[in-house]
Length: 457
Image (cartoon, rainbow, N blue to C red; front, side, top):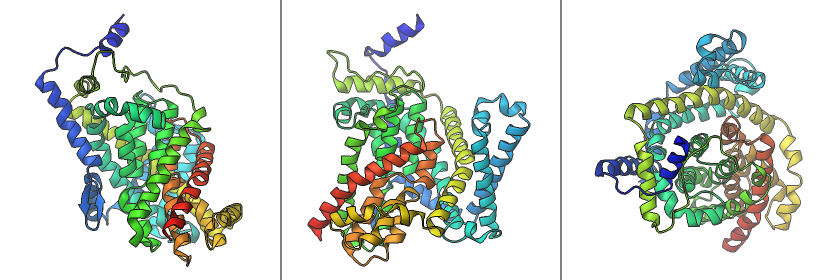
């Protein structure tokens, strides 16, 4: 009976909300949108407030961060081993601690490996190819920035997702988002935050929305694999690494065009289209606008309802702490292990040279100069987003460097960060899904990027 009455209440517009209720939606939502989406000129590029805060903290904590991440990984692995071998009550009886440390044998082994790699890299000891400048140290540098990004984002994320911003914008944009990307309107803010912000923050935001019952498995998979692009400042870094920075406006426009085309197609074809359209848990959010109700009025009503359920500042801090601890104890050792092994394969074996051979005739067909040199760079982005730029930086033809740079930023899926974060989330995506989607994005985007490159060179 209660369930039905709750649904009925959700499907009708409240007669009136108080000014206090309205402000509880408006002020925190504006703050969240400002932090995650508002572009600010930062030197010779744009950044968002979240990025500026994070970069300031990274600068201040530079000397402490390597020790902090090593210590965190050791704690994570010790508690995982204790949970597996001793099954203490304080972990087994806590849903939160159990979700962090009570893991499968496979993930336990991965954590142990990641922690061993981290300790080797921190002390510069042990097997050289594990802690070298092109393997372990690359991952270590990545994780020192990731831990700060997640710290800041975890505590600010509740202001974007808990106070009605997504409901309000989603109601207004549903008629655009749904037919274009087959996604719910409320994902509009998620898509923007994923696109302009840090890639990992986008994945975490989508993960939280999926776990709260606002997206189906298919929708969450589509958002993370189509919109979790790297931030605009990072695009500029890649462009400069490849000496195409002087072409940056066209370079970024190319990424946007190829990215949007991929985002329209990928959710409509396997494997994403085959992921079940089922919810992780039931949510009473209602996107369909009732008859005789304007989108604006319905959007405000749904947003205020959501804000009323947001809870106190203490609730937001508790949620932020759970998001942050859930990421660092799980993600750091696992990313260190998977990323280091992937980089060892990429740097010290010919595996990527072999599997990139089919790309050579395709690059020839698209009339891309130095096709044989460009082929490994066109697929190695599956491991890490930096590697294509590293491999392609020595190519002489500027058009080829332009194509590889833009392609690497449209491919999106790479194991060292985003891929691992997605695999350890509850979103129903498997490793083979990621590999197939990576190939699809590559084959879709490459002709578009090549066409634009031939038009401007």
